[in-house]
Amino acid sequence: MASGLPVTRTMLYTVVQLPDQIDTSNADEVREQLLALLNAGAGPLIVDLTGTTFCDSSAVNALLRTHTRAGALGCRLHVAVTPGGIVRKVFDITAVSRVISLADDVGSAIAMAMHMTLEDAGSGRPEGT
Image (cartoon, rainbow, N blue to C red; front, top):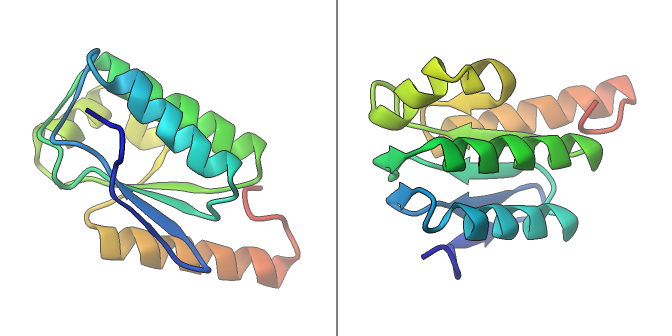
């Protein structure tokens, strides 16, 4: 189940590790926890899917809704997903990879988030714009 997903917060970003499998049995709960983190001011939100081996359309929907909420809150969403895995293939097939910022691992996602935050700060733009 998704309750109690591992979350690491810093002053600069939040990382949340998603379960091994995300499907209709837990996607709503995953979505609600991600939205709660955003609503609490998570800063850039890094979603760690590197340990996730299966996701279905309900998981894709949960991530897209989270991405939409992040944009509305002026926040960025970055997803770490292993290249060549089933989840990455699902993202490529459904075009999620064209909408959501993907990285190959959590470290790369954090670096991407920090780079974009610095760019935004230098340009005077709010974080998510």
